[in-house]
Image (cartoon, rainbow, N blue to C red):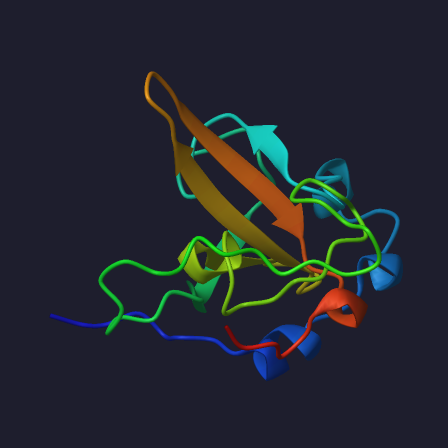
Length: 134
């Protein structure tokens, strides 16, 4: 069975910044500086621009990744200025996608609550990516 490519903080920092996205690119319709709910997972979301899956941030050797969060500067889970820390929740459970046209990156995380499933999206701002470890 083929395994997904596991990406690192360094890989995320190499993606284009949202500020560098061409104004006429279809992916500009995806505005998600913090975690935003979307309709379905990205691979099935027919309303989304064409995105390609780059890989995952999930460690295949970790059966139950930490639920500890990493915050700085008074940020919270949904804060647009929250750091993107791949070793921490929810990033450690994310798939990484990129716009097929411009390469702009996105994180997709599915939250499973007691009575719901919520697919969430956050654009990757390389300036917010940190290498913190739990």
